[in-house]
Image 1 (tube, one colour):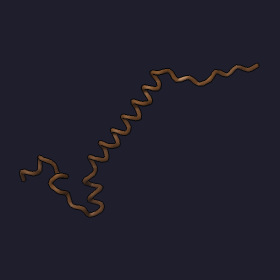
Image 2: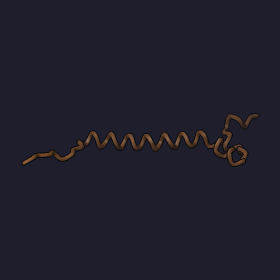
Image 3: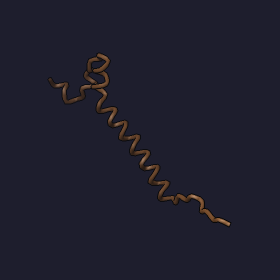
Image 4: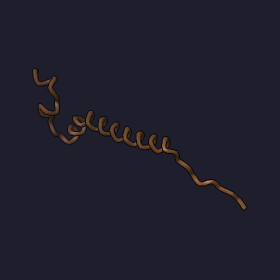
Length: 59
């Protein structure tokens, strides 16, 4: 008789996988938001005051 152990993930491994998934989703969100102006520029949409941010409103 041949014994093959079943795969095992301890709670620490599951927690690590969840943390990695959350970090990937948040990282993609930050990358998308930071490049939103360029994405809109590809479609010919000009930036509004809201898109430029509070720093550029003084100019």
